[in-house]
Length: 401
Ligand code: AMP
Image 1 (cartoon, rainbow, N blue to C red):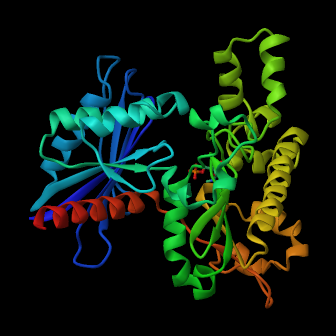
Image 2 (spheres, rainbow, N blue to C red):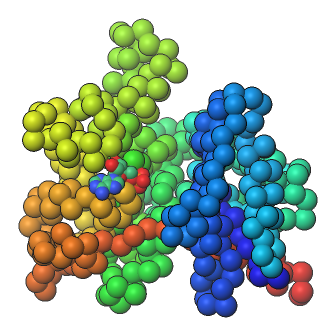
């Protein structure tokens, strides 16, 4: 039987999945991918093959059909498409691993209880990430569950980069910079050497520009600084999130605007960023198509680019220079215009855009003998599967010794 792995990414009303099989190569091969949307309210399921062709689609009425039913449906769907394959393990994207976890862990009830303690640190994501682990431990005993953290990759940062200038008691309560998008950065760090060996050992800034957006400074492939902090709200403006904000704005919202903490949180997480500034959309494609005629769409993009380049400057200072800049995720990989605009603000770094390579998708999009710029597609799900395999093989080695 060929072992297969499910990589899960659960949100409040969605469950995204990718299914990989051992291929005999060093890397597992993607065989199926898809998602459940609208969980708890008219759910819809779609499964595709690795090329994106729809294999199956199903909708349910507004009945009791949540994450548990979705997971049960997915496992039975997989059984129907098993074809000599056997489910070996499930890997879960978990936003928060706290200060202690610098790598993935095999999840059991005790680990789950520990991860629950991080819910107050990421209340909008952590509960939904943990739900499928809880369900799987109960419904699929014997199938290992691996928690893969968005924060873990940043634990290599110097202590100073993880600190806020706050009273010590607050640090002791866990108020510190954690950083996120770690699965994406770890994947990019792992493939840098395939593009240019000098990147793998050099000073590289990775720009993960998607609906969520952040930057990470890598030295020899390890994170030394990142723009997201205590939460995934900090740093760059994003699709709907505000990015870095003077904390006094929050006091103003609560005290003067008389908003509740929940209302203020909703504005900062879901009504700000590209959407808030443009008043139009959180989607870069829409903003690009309107930018010629709509000044607000233009301003949203300008602010996005301005903040990216300012933060790049800050990370160059943390690194003491730059050898490479990598664009990744939805906007970073696909929006040539954002790459042009970011690079146009960075001539002082020695980065020089190769316009033709940029338009044709790279991978290298710089000219000259200075630092280099690249487009490298990220693959967070493959990173989850790699982490699952390493956790399982470490567990096997422990058992054998
Ligand atoms: P992600 O969260 O990584 O899926 O990225 C989502 C963002 O990528 C959205 O703002 C999309 O508009 C943007 N995006 C995806 N494809 C393109 C494209 N071809 N051109 C411009 N932006 C794109």
